[in-house]
Length: 495
Image (cartoon, rainbow, N blue to C red; front, side, top):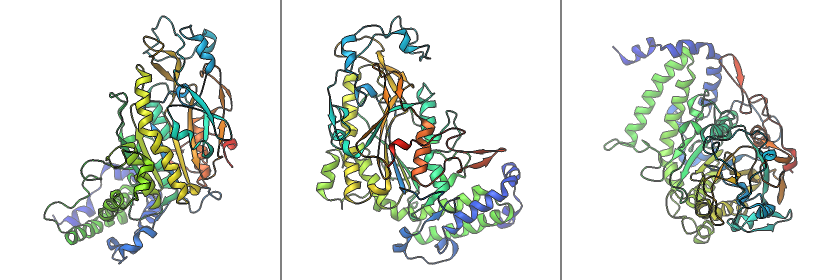
């Protein structure tokens, strides 16, 4: 059968039921295809030098209010950093070493199965020294000397909380606003709502850094940067540190670039017939993704080639900056992505799940990320990019003040703790040198200014000019949004 005739009569079950979304599909199609106007795929001729100035509009015709920022970098410490060893100093605990945590502090809280069977819950004070930094007098651990050096540029939130108590639901909650898999990630929501500012690179890029702490680490699944029920073109594109930066990007051996161009044009005509016939949004996404992949064959190698970076800039990020896959290397690439107007950059750093040997492994983890994180802020600032970029540092929940496993003066472990944890933010619209929220003497319960995961996401969207209650996507009979039916703006951290 003739291929074009066959494609005209094919209709899958999914496409049949997808007809109810025809209006949505047409809208998305117009948005995606408008971003390709003048591209070779649609028969135009755009000089390669002009590609970076083109973008793809999002579903919002314009922001709901004037935005403070245009881009976001998320530095995600997967495994949950211990807040009382980094940002939430509790010196009174030194006098309670190995004393039982009062039952009134636990107050019936659900515990993980890893410590629920312990006969007692002995207090484990942090063995690290703290000092005060910046105009707010923020107390920061000796483990983070470079972060302490940017204390005057960041807001530390000490009163984050979540309902999730295990890693996968908690990470999924932080990334997508739901503990259940299947929802779009924050980067995908931004890609969908605001579109792309660059037609040669994805609007949402993801990197997974190497780590030197606890070797056995929580797995990361692609759904953490997935598009959920949104069309797949809005999902994150993962950048690899070994081999081709993006899988299947290079032309196969023996295939010339002109041949690849002709293949894509023919495929686009076939896919275009499906769009005209049934308005399938996934077909529209496929057209846009194929064209993006073609353009990335040039843009990605240029992005990851850091030989042109001045030596003094590389020195800011530390000695590991030239080692592919390290957190330092990822932070430098994040800055290069921001320069090229990538909308959302996500870096995952695993190994923060310290149920044992915490003093030893957290020291190595902090050595991985401290200098690069601070360098990223300074580098963005010196290039004039920090004013319209938001940087977020933190994990999925906190750790308990009580010890998991054997306790000594030199060694301890900590269990999961959703009731309070610490994060920091820097960039456009965020107060500088500010500490938000407080916890009790045990870093166990919040005593002032709680910030829920939905509150944080609502505030991030607000900085980008989005009312979190109005960025929605209709699916299966209801409107979905990043913050579900919750979320309040954290006004006190904003300028």
